[in-house]
Length: 352
Image: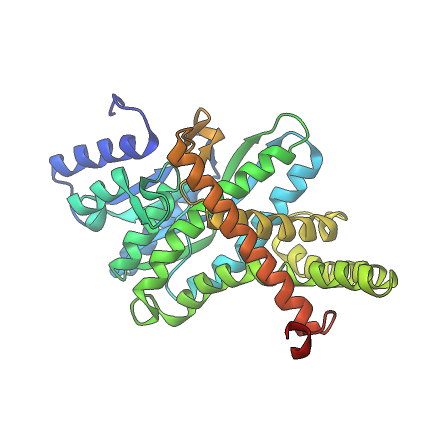
């Protein structure tokens, strides 16, 4: 039992790992990372621990999750859908002996890497060098830092679909603000770590996982293409375009929901609508966060925040971030309009 004498989750984990390192634990001993608000399903350790004995190359595993939500019913439905999506993705990623995150709810590691000073120091003080925001430390995302370190070591990672952990969510109010804050935290951690993961290259981490990380960065833009086309076509040509778009959304998201139902323990009739809203809001939040990687807030841990200074330099950086985001969005809109032919290129004589 280690008493925490310093604030912050990252520093607390580092404190425990340093204590383990001093005790000289064996490199094949198992270390479990889990959140304090996680509830373990029966038999979870019995399903996880033997995997390390059977496979000496295995360095880390992550587990399945289900949500227990105290709040609006639609938030419960949204989180249930998110975990169904998570199961599909992780089962696919695990086939490549890698995953895209070693979730903090519960993951199990071989002590080989975790007791090294390099790993501990990285977890405690993980940071990023950014051309606009300078050098800043990560507030949340310790699971992503752990994942990135494992990638650099070419460690084998697996997802265990029958090892279940329940996550507790207490939501006050309508839930929209909490949903947006979660997206900002998840998307920010993904963007901050995805950039350096891509730099490792497909030869280091495997082409499939490398492409999955790349796809996360591409999908946030492609998701915005269809609503841009629908709105532009409605305004410039015929209002029936928006009707056709809604019909397409209803059919396509219903088909996706029917597939997701196989990976959920319940069926929710509102999933097609929540799925589209989830995709659209997630894409918009990622575009917003892309130029604001230093902006971090963690409501689940005492409402911690960073990157929100009020100095003149900070205000100028915020202005530059807003300018860059505007340029990106305008470029996307104009590219889509020209490509679809909704707006024609000006004739050369117009400029002469």
